[in-house]
Length: 629
Ligand code: COA
Ligand code: AMP
Image (cartoon, rainbow, N blue to C red; front, side, top):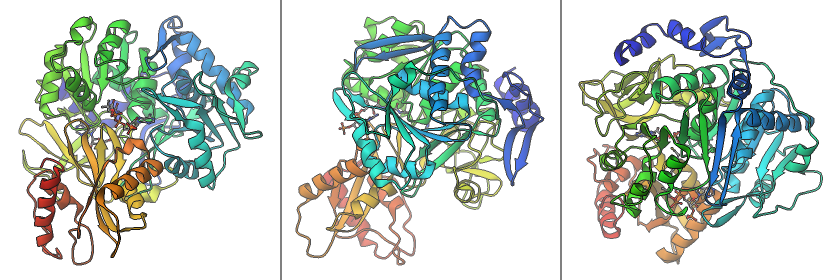
């Protein structure tokens, strides 16, 4: 079946379509109903019983895949490689689930995982899933304050921690960050289980911290616990338009079906093949395509603790592809831009045999045409740009390689994936004509696997996503559809920015900058950057009489943002301004500031306080070379 009829069927008959796909996973008890509503919200697979860890591991062991490699850990930063077969990984997960069970973790409990790209992190996630506990992985690049916010929201019974991470050569002391976060948070976990890494031994606090290996050495294995399809598998916090992150909830049933479906039909990969997502388990790409989808689909997944460059060079990706015979590869455009910058002619690539590679997928940020073309010419395989979000958990727009490879239009993430009825609308919610830019929305119901709710905050779920355009999911992205139905995503229309494929909130950075004693008011906006796609820039109005020069202020603010939000914010640029553009009611016109920085046209609102401030800003940005200026 070609793309169009397959897709049309998913939209005209969602229940039939997702019943058929749902039947392909190994339920303990089949669902009674495919699509239903609970408290007014759509849900999938009513009363279906399953266990995600069982689907990812035990199911394969029981069906002849026990000796196949499930997980290959490759760590150029520690010079370590280690592989696990499905049977070995299942046994390890069952044992660690036993550790958690002995510490009292049961179905429905929450567990925070603050760990880097090591096999124990994957084991921890799958062990939680095995018990029906809800994990929340926090990305290592966030600072203690961000971790504390997540601890207070998720209220974990336990925290699972590694002693440290390695950012190329810089050691990240995870335990110190945890200690600081726990000083700040109101909620305290009952215990922390700490995995000691060879390069950093964390001091353990009596009565609170337990050594991972010691507990493991005496543990009994634990079996999979049956959970309901609608029970949460994990919470993943992502940046919203306020300083408080959103706890995206993922259910077990819809997620398992969507993960399997996407591997077959979007990524065109077969069970037994090798799939590599070069991302981090702290992001949604890592959850879905390092851990859950490849394992549920019976693939071998690669866990790479390294960078595209400098570990040791810009040939790192090609080395991994050759060594593990990767069939399908997924990363962010920024990684390619970094490689291209170091090795523009692709000299390092020619040292490796990458002939196993069939497709290369890019997501996480807009893919510029030059990067796409460079990657295509270098790798000589289809380079597939696809669009999705933490909220969706799996691709919403893609060239569905497993169904029919459509002609590529650079700049477009191609067409809607099955289940996603994607529309581009004007502010009144009416569809715009072809090639006209508008807001990207998705008609409800969203397909299985997408967020059913926010953790403990249904009201915010409704106001953020469902209320702006009734009957639709509001994506927060702008874009347009061409006459052939290809969708072009042009960028966020809110205050979320994408820095090197990392999603960040400018509001969270503004909160920190505004707390500087000499800052009267400020605005942080994302501006175009050649390498990282976007970077944050702070525009600051000083308190009257404040005596500080720009370099000193910049240094202090950079340090404050690193300490409060984390190094991943990549906040490195500050400009002192006399005033900010505002409406007469005092609202800062951030969108217009972004347009000035990116040299895009804009219409100032009639309510603007003073037009001349826009000219001042333009001049300043030109002078300082901010954004596209
Ligand atoms: N733990 C602690 N610190 C981290 C971290 C982690 N897991 N990840 C990043 N950081 C730190 C970095 O060390 C850096 O710190 P520095 O300011 O002291 O140098 C800072 O956060 C910014 O990191 P990053 O934006 O990643 O920049 P970089 O210059 O280190 O690397 C790239 C640039 C392009 C190589 C890198 O961003 C990359 O590989 N991006 C791909 C992103 C990706 O996979 N996204 C997932 C979506 S698919
Ligand atoms: P995250 O939730 O971290 O996955 O970030 C989601 C956001 O990244 C989206 O809302 C988009 O703004 C952006 N994004 C992801 N993939 C793409 C893509 N292929 N093209 C353009 N933007 C993208």
